[in-house]
Amino acid sequence: MEPVTIPIEDVLDLHNFKPGDVPDLLNEYFIACIEKGIFSVRIIHGKGKGILKQNVRKALKKNILVESFREAPPESGGWGATMVKLKGEIEIQY
Image 1 (cartoon, helix red, strand yellow):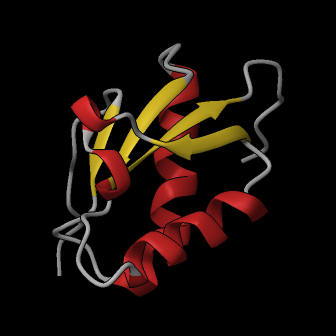
Image 2: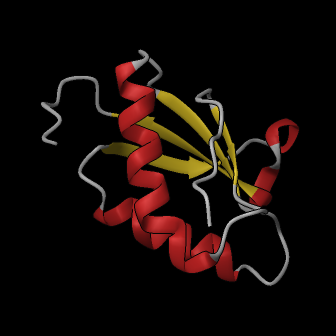
């Protein structure tokens, strides 16, 4: 399987990704965002049963690049999305 290339912007829609890929995907995406000067990202996980949302939030709690996160406001997806604030002052190790 070839790697999927996604544009680096302030929104990441997880609907096309496997739940098991979420932690690594988020980390790599956040690194790319920080390198581009993007420090606020909306993660779209959908509403459904809330399983993907739980997985996303669990990964966010463990990610050292994340300063904070919260549920998106209604006009940005409400409980179907999470707003993430990334740390601006962190040295990224490769």
